[in-house]
Image (cartoon, rainbow, N blue to C red; front, top):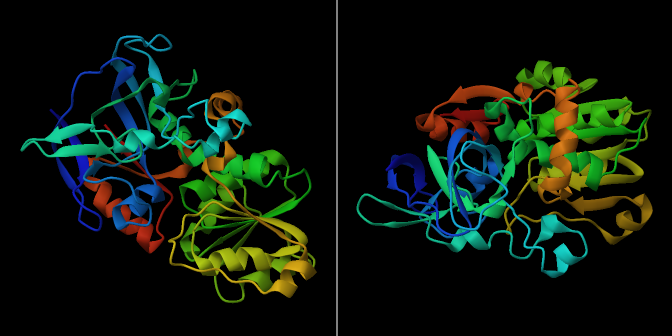
Length: 359
């Protein structure tokens, strides 16, 4: 029996309770969690924006130590530090075949599996494959990657989602070039990673936008050269800061129609907007046909930072070890499992950066 955060039904409060976790079977790995980040995607699962089987153990951004491995697992062994990969690629579908592993058709197939049971026998699913909001988890072998050497395991949990997503949004999706200007909408955990990645890419002006004035200091520490409190006039403020043209690149980390539209309007003619935030299917963003032609801007979705974890983790690790990327800066609160519901409330209210569950 291990302690875990369980979502009993969509829209229901999380329950912090004991669950019965099986031993790892063939092709599986048991991991004792060191830490797990509280991500907006967990909130999206709990409120039904993203739909996967429930009841479920949530949590998808984590790191820990291998406790045991099942038959056939050879790339990790008991005692190894690992980072959880919530979206493992199958290597066989169309998208994997053309190198777009972040769009793997089978990446979330494991979410339909039976992961554990409650004390009364209720079957539980792993919310986004890895069920990281628990003292221990059992995952498919391709859901674990060796943790980079020299990085504290607590902080390494952030590599599993926020950092790969933020870094990839800049380097793989928007493809920011040295000297370009970047505006980032939404300064939570992912937004802070985007700011640091933009600085690493050599952006000349990095503008942070958020509804909270209190995040300015944090944003500037992450690399922002300017800070704008979000309002109806945000695009005008961005143009003023960029010589009247608008930013070369906008990265939207909120997932709301108004911010997606605002990010689009904040870029220059021919600019690029990358949408990282996850919105609901009933939320519409509208454009007229003439403006699409006239402005010549591009609008691009971004899944998991368009990242390949096996390729990108070593690159990120080098930036971290060299002091170019500060993982701890993303964390504004360290909590226990019991603190997750309050962390959800803070995300809804737009407060803080990343909350990190430490076991």
